[in-house]
Amino acid sequence: MAYSSSNGPARLTPLHDLKDFKVADRNLDVRNWEVIGADGQRLGKVDDLIVDRELMKVRYLDIDVDKDRFLPDTDARHLLVPIGAAHLDDDNNQVFLANIDQNALTRFPFYRGGAVDSDLEYRVMHAFTKPNDAYMAPAATAAPTADFYQNDHFNEERFYQKNQNSGMMNAGGVSGGGVQDDIATIERLKQMLDQGTITQEEFAVLKRKAIGF
Image (cartoon, rainbow, N blue to C red; front, side):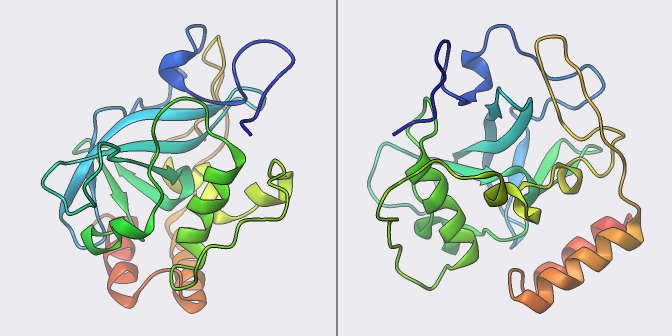
């Protein structure tokens, strides 16, 4: 069941469906930016942003995977990536994914457009946090609580760390947040490495980017 409101669109909705919303003027609009996987290879491009219209936050990137990337025979070639699981390079208009390369694509659920429902959110998070385990759907697919978003996968500052803004948006383009310094970024990467959410190779690549190399 999709998130819904008593009136208007569902809570998690593609930006292009929200005619009164726009990316804040001081933030970067990463739609159509090239997406690079953890192995350094292009995976596709950012097609859209999935917005929590109640909290004025970008929750996911909608990634349009290139047709030459290996995927099962299906028309759906879009993946959702939590905003904090990606890192931008605004010098080259690129978005980097620390946990996804071509070989990992098949473990992620496909996104077929429109409002994002709770089951898809749980499946996406499972693919990131328990990639080697079979997915077991909750007995009742209740909407994720605030705790669901209280982890680095949804930390906007990780994505917008080169900017002064955290990626919040609304009809007037309001934004807020702050810049993480390099030390804090590297500390967080080290925690991810210790927790096994990124590999040593991914850690090295992201560390170099964090310090500008």
